Image 1 (tube, rainbow, N blue to C red):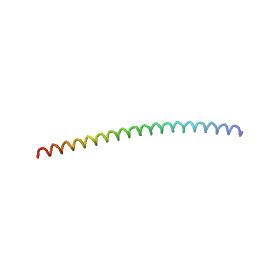
Image 2 (tube, rainbow, N blue to C red):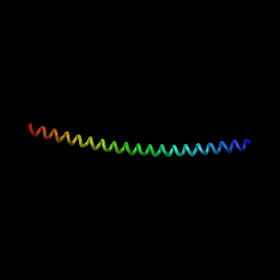
Image 3 (tube, helix red, strand yellow):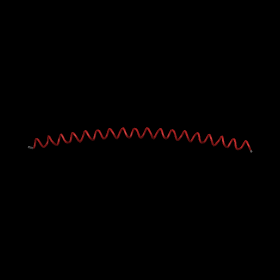
Image 4 (spheres, one colour):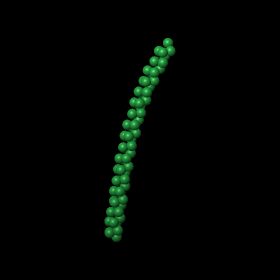
Length: 67
């Protein structure tokens, strides 16, 4: 009887391990995807900030020329 209990526990634990490994894989993929989106967003924000600075300089230049 004990032999069967150990076998059942081992099979159950194997199933749990498979589920945990699957969950870890999903979390890694999610993290990597989030990281990629974050980097892209940061690059886009930096680019927009640079364009904003250039636009402000042009506006200031135009404003000083007309005076």
